[in-house]
Image (cartoon, rainbow, N blue to C red):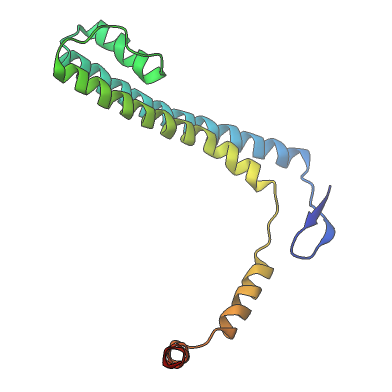
Length: 156
């Protein structure tokens, strides 16, 4: 497979993996994916536990109704039971914001190995960028020179 490297602007040949290396890398990817899926499941379970406890104590719902209410809010479907007390309504609004955050965190965790492997497919060389950065730093004046230039500008 040929790729275009941006630092040299020439075509170079990428090393191809033999089948055993490909299978090994696929197995590593799948194991990482399931590890991250388990981690996101922990976050979702903790969020569900917070909702169950909160609805049971703040709204006075039974354990089963608390589970249903927390599950529906956490999944984005919306509330089921009408809430009568002010504390239950305040908890429900805070829990809805919290569950949105939990959803974003869980999706970030699940998609991170996929994004890593996708971005890993694009070869990037930082050699030219670091050389250019070093040249730019050598061309920059000292802070004393910069201060004297500023004072000269202020005089005129």
